Image (cartoon, rainbow, N blue to C red; front, side):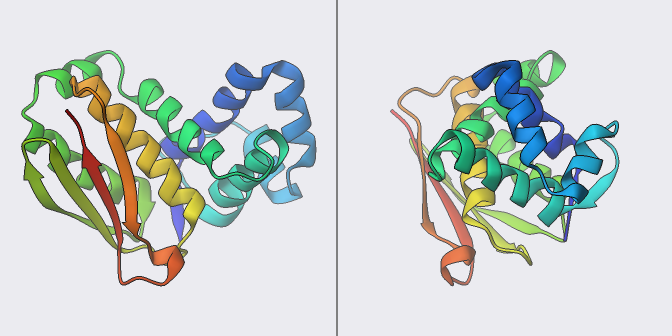
Length: 185
């Protein structure tokens, strides 16, 4: 399975913003040799990278180093990633598009960040929405939490208040899909 450079370029930026240059140096030094090769090079946003070495292991390491192993670090990273990726013209699109169009676009974004990946919207109604990933060959709670955090923050950028995104079903826990259930006031 592979991940697009746009999904990994934000990781060192988040670590430096949250934990400073010393935290970034600590994380970089602890990376596997393959991950270090990826992150010490120029990460190209349009290129594909092996998801395990470029995304899953570096996120797990970040959670281990700075969050005592808690996956809430992956969710915080996802929120930061939404702020990073949904700025400028993209922020205007998020704010101005209808909720239904925005949520359907989110399913499409997942399929352009991860390969192979299949995602679909299963519910959009006032105050609630649900999105499912039905194909993600390397299921990971870390990836699910990153996506949940991104979705949560993206809904806030869209203008929703009191946003909560839960993961009631999970490929990583053995379910037939990963479901992101969003609610807001």
